[in-house]
Image (tube, rainbow, N blue to C red):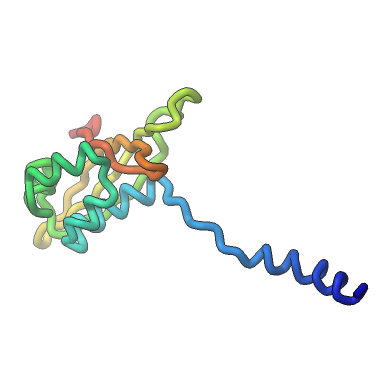
Length: 140
């Protein structure tokens, strides 16, 4: 009996350590995945999954990835690279549901490349970060 208790006490910490915690996506990961799905993968549904309900309605009115990129975001590119900078302002303690991120966007069209700076407004919906809207950057 003592051996059984000893075995349980020894193996229990190892078994509880093996449980994998779900990965919670950060706002930076969400915005990069949104633009990757929209421009590089040309996958409208995947891009919609990273948008808030308000932004999804707006995207649906444009209908295709090319239309969203060209008319809604004013960035008509074949391929895109997005790097996220630090948030513009640290979030206030009372406002943990939204965040603004600086985006450095490098777009490729044909053999040319273009640099853009945008501001992504992120919000929490159903416990997950979503893209609420994309604002023009200070240099555009």
